[in-house]
Length: 387
Image (tube, rainbow, N blue to C red; front, side, top):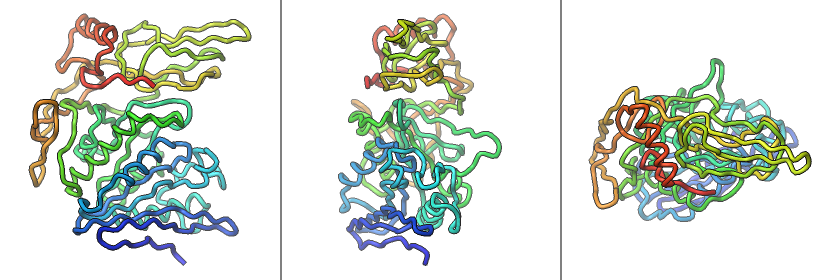
């Protein structure tokens, strides 16, 4: 018998489970349904597709705890932990078959257990949603600067509404498939995307607050909650990038010298690795001017493991004020001023630049040094946050 989505009455939150089985193996998938008092859109909120991404799981759990159903319009389909057995085992993959659940969509009702999980989420939940966001973090080992990831230019509006300074385009190699947000977007032609906030199997309170603001923003943007969007004055839409992390050349203990979101200059010392057995020592230095995008939070690394990642500064390929065309006027909060969302500027860039116009080389370097020295805000907008 095909599992069915639980139902809730207006103004009610129902916490239920759906049994997914293959032979003798059975896993109860938590599926929660929150219904507002007034009818409206249906949204899918999911987390824990990778079982070791506990920051994303905690973020969604906190959001549900703080949700006021009296103010909600429409319905939320919530999957608080999509990879239940992976969460129990602290594993990225589904332990029963070793598959990455986020490479299994749209799934198979007669396939492996991971494919059956994917099939239910895809055909019962994503199919019923008008839009959806899948919450992720960097998993074990590192913490990420919060950002939205979109794979379709038409998703820029909703990606920007999440409210991070960075919106990154997801680029995949040919033949790459199976990701929930991408497959749901292709199949159902509705706004599905995912976000990255935090990581390292650590709960970062300031990053959880950033994520909570983002989720509230999305519901306000979709008319499901009252209120104002909280957005940065400037946001940067970046093309997809290869892995920018600098690997460890030796085994040893890591001493980080920079903070997440800090501006750095080429040649600046980012981290030091010391081997207490051999007394070998290695310095990790920035290869370019840029912003610290991810940091290894483990005390000990092996050769080849990522230590620190830097998004390079670069010149803008185009400066453009994004025209926000919405059916209703929405407003955003900024310190000392309330502006229309149409005034929130989106810059399409081939890199990050700390100034909002095409820089001269000397100014870019001088500005990066100043930002690094002062512990300034990323691109003058992103707070430096220390793990």
